[in-house]
Length: 102
Image 1: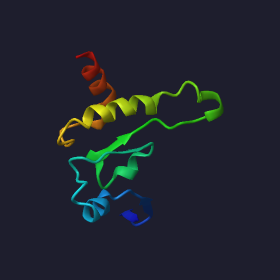
Image 2: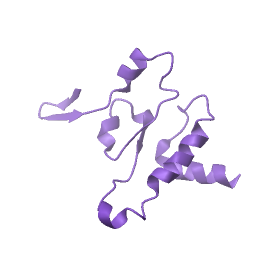
Image 3: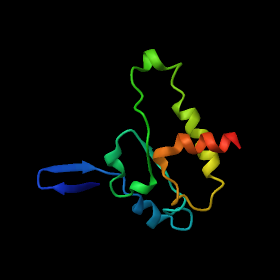
């Protein structure tokens, strides 16, 4: 899907409303999160987006990159919630640190 920002710029976005409309019995803005390393992909649903660090130089960083492992822990923590809307996913690492420290 393309979203017009101005007369000269188009950006591909990930419109979660399509999923929420087709599968409303399972998914809503209260229980959906998406990851991407490009923030503008969250343009239509910024509250549901979590911007991750890009995975670069895989041949050098394969053993060092732990971002997805940490995100797994974050997902396990927020899965306990009925509503994600009060979360600021920008600070997911801080949230996870607090929860793991309890």
